[in-house]
Length: 203
Image 1: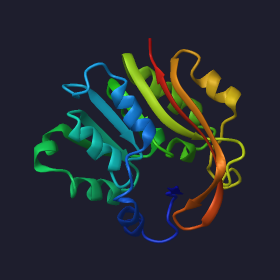
Image 2 (image 1 turned 180 degrees about the vertical axis):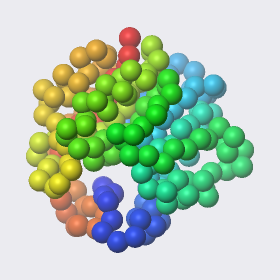
Image 3 (image 1 turned 135 degrees about the vertical axis):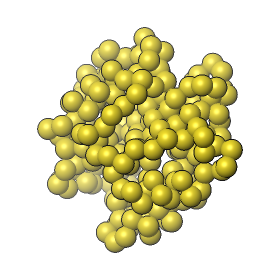
Image 4 (image 1 turned 30 degrees about the vertical axis):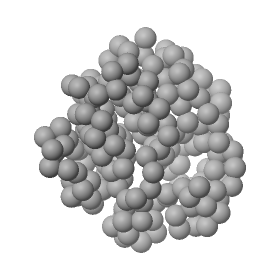
């Protein structure tokens, strides 16, 4: 499996390259965990939406979606590929994680984006995410582990298994998977990928 990563060149190249990748399993699992599969009036937040694969998936399932990314190009790429029937259920926000303004949400999804929040600001961001969940809402995220190849890169935040359990102490785990293997990445070839993929529910 190839894993996307921040491009060294133009973001547009990265978005084009990842546009057709499959919907991430954790996001799909989180959607299926809700009793009524049709999104109805439920709100999902896609943090670091990138090329918008998961945002489009959730819109197709009937969710309202707030797509957030620091890069304006990401939001432009998403809006250009959303079906006409889904546009009215999509809202967007261009912001750094530390500047996020989050509404109360049923689902918060973040695939490989939270590790790019600096360690000093991560606790406040995490607290904001948990506080934004409705009772019964779910947090579905992918966090980098301490053996990830990018752990020494500036601005990257990694977690141990104990960190993950502490972060979710006020939530109920529904799914927790640890990935620890070499994987092909978008622009750097084979890299060691250590990550925790989880879904946790607010009681």
